[in-house]
Image (tube, rainbow, N blue to C red; front, side, top):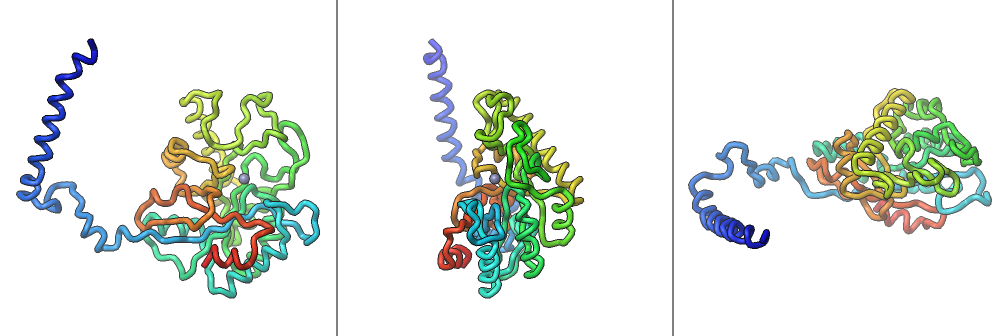
Amino acid sequence: MKRKMCGRPLLSCLLAVLLCIGAAPAQAAETPASEKSGAVNWVETVDEGILQEPVDIPILMYHNLVAEEDDPSISKNTMWVGQFQHQMELLEENGFTTITVDQLVEFGNRGKALPEKPVLITFDDGYRSAYELAFPILQEMDFHAAMFPIGVSVGKDTYKDTGLAMVPHFSWEEAKEMAESGLVSIQSHTYDMHQWEAFETAGGGQCLRPNILRQPWETLGEYMQALREDVERSRQDIVEGTGQEAVALAYPGGLHDQISEELLRSYGVKCTFTIEGGKAQVTPGSERSLYGLNRFYVKPTTTDEEFLQWVG
Ligand SMILES: [Zn+2]
């Protein structure tokens, strides 16, 4: 019955569409697109340089560092500081310029030029080693980096719900010192949407949030509220802790989807990072191209050859 009722209007609709398609060229010929109110002349826009070709930018991702080369905790996320220093020297010797997240955002939003051979250095999770071991090297070399601490872990060395030992994380005082140097910006890795099942038992394990995606136990409305609250808390803590605003977020575990990205955008996050390998592609003049940026996952197994190939 329903199908029968819908049949005729659908046919009329199709006819109307066909008529419109037929009429379109005649209309366009009468009025040039640029003279119509509100119309965009894309050719002119491109000629003016507002929208340009996408640019490939290497972004490096680090996590934890250790002081000794033979430290038994060296793993995919934990690297000897000597290797990190050597990689920074490779960047310098090969003429790379480290850029800030703000520069990247200005480039994506307004096409403001980046230096020659730009590279963005990032540190995830906010480990104290980023302050104790990486920061002195950045200072010595006058290099920029962005650090993405997990808000709830700042200044902690135990998990909040279980009290289990955790790799120490830098404090807000240390974060502030780094931010005030002008070399490091503190960005978001969420306030508390980066939980590890083996160490945390939030809500008896049922409400564990390992990433920013909507979890199976919540409605869309609950999810939207939770993500908004987390983003706001994270941003507020960073402003209060460092005196500087965060504009970017690194996805925990790199996980994201269309809805999470749309929501973050609407909550004012201007730039997001994944853990997908490959160069980030940013289109000057396209603020949307600043979301879901690729990063190279630097590990102890990363060879010099591979490293130079990534950034080159
Ligand atoms: Zn992380």
